[in-house]
Length: 240
Image (tube, rainbow, N blue to C red; front, top):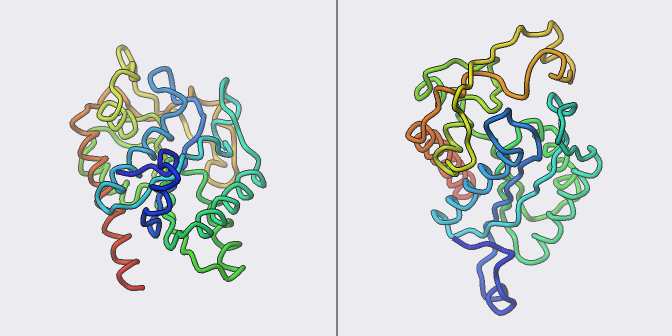
């Protein structure tokens, strides 16, 4: 596994930089049981495992994101839309300049997807040669149905629930505090999914049932997601 930021000058010049992985996370409350950098920890671990499997290089993670539902909870740090898009494009330009051919964004913060898509469109529109791919937990709904005991609060939404808590128990158990936690399935506001509403008025900073989480489930979920990313990436790159 190779990290871009840890390479010395001579090592960097000699390294094959064609395949790159960029983890994207957030600083966002994840209930009383998980740290605010949960998304970054998970995305970075996935990028590093992919580096081991493919001999790609892992770029330093983007640790700030634009916050939507969790924007009004104490401790969250939200980047503006423009700041996030501009940062991504600057990273793309540097990565391409130093030899990047395929940059795979490993996104641990689902709400970042729309801004990454805009960045991808801007990049393609300028005629650059480096490809930029986005992976946000591919297959997670099917994986959750296979592995988890609890149901998700809302299809497509998981936040500090059995899924993320299990992964964190696998990756960094010392950071998890689930003793005494009770499930949280708040009533869904009528406009959920229709506008970017704050969760502050109807829920604590997690949803679902993290009490059902185990490290064994986390390892299975983590491995299955990484397997999906690796499979998709190899298909894309082999197709040219």
